[in-house]
Image (cartoon, rainbow, N blue to C red; front, top):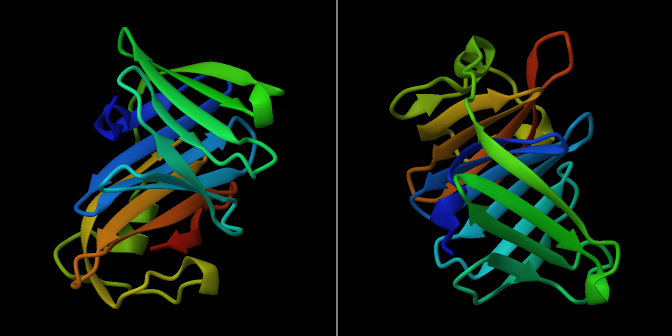
Length: 189
């Protein structure tokens, strides 16, 4: 299974995920319902799955070759040490487990539509070589002064914007709607 199967928005009873294709790989944003967000990254070669839970640190899981699944493992990580995606009938099944399969959890995700909140469009400045019109929080500042917008959207209370810098590298900004409007909370390159 290829990471291209993840592209798009996915909603389930337990979690939501959105995956965006950029020139240098895939960016994802996931959130358990009512829980914190997780920024996700798969490089273009599909060799790893990098998770950045709530914007704190990075954990990298190595790809495990499989035709049936998209699977990543880090045996040294306490939980999860395994992340597996399977596509069946237009749905995604996500399974995570600890070392040796301990505490395994699985859930289904169905295709979903993203919304495009004007506040994120205004804050990110959609368009060619956009420039940020705002002062960004330190952890949410884009890594370059100008960028091309790749994608903007939101699923539930977590939003995303992906941009591409002039050097060709892409980045993700995660947005949160805390009830008083959309604010950027995290950026990763």
